[in-house]
Image (cartoon, one colour):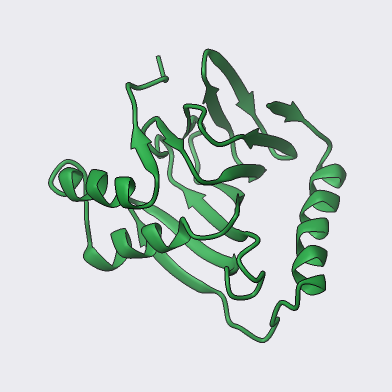
Length: 171
């Protein structure tokens, strides 16, 4: 589901996620962890440990033209809030352009992808429910994997974390 929302609505939704983490006993003293993965700067804002496994929230800074290949999550639902930039999202056969304040929800088992179609870096807040997939991102980062050289290992890690890569949705 792709929904254009006012920025205020997006902020309220992210505050609700943060409140959920506090209710679940999140430890707010942890310093966010930042790393690079396939050209995207990622900062773990809420970890699995902080949310008791309920979710992980990641701020992603995506360069122009950047974004993941088409894929399917078999274990997680994903909510994305565009906070800066211009993105295009593909969800099955649907395509939508998204500016700051747009909220995108991808349920598990449905193909999707996104790309920064703007001319400047864009920023997203991605919440993965339940948590766990962020460990794959960290593993890719720590291994220094790149595409195309590390593609086979990325696909292997994807399978380990319940991700399958599919034919590109972007046209």
